[in-house]
Image (cartoon, rainbow, N blue to C red; front, side, top):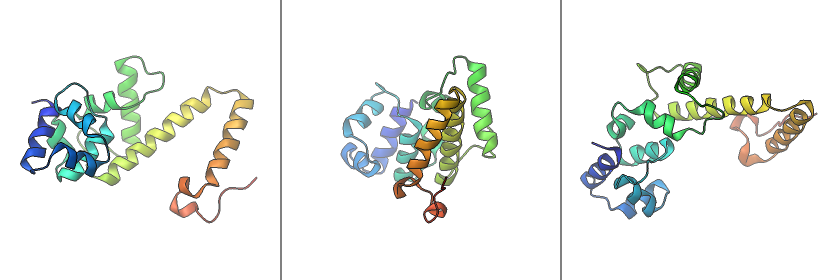
Length: 162
């Protein structure tokens, strides 16, 4: 069964309309319609929202195809082949303490993966810059730390100073 058909099946079992589910998840009804009709694939973040709202596990939606969904969902910088992709996933997952035998299951686990991915992508892009670009990037990040919306809870009081 496709992911779209599985979403449809679980949604109807919970007696929810497309509008209700899409509103509860925070995305458009037309996007949900495209996914349920297998015209588009939802990103992993959307699948996690659907799973949370329907009170099912992500594996109930995707079965054993989590790695494939993850590959389709991630914005992978400069990753062109399967070996490089698998190295990327393995690095992110192992940094977070996960493996194919111990995949992320909870919302906390998913946030951990997303944060590790953001860190990896930031460092990969940072490495592409020359010294002047790195200095500019650091100053831009410093500006972001002064915006409360972008700070972690523990850093709200004391943003880094130069």
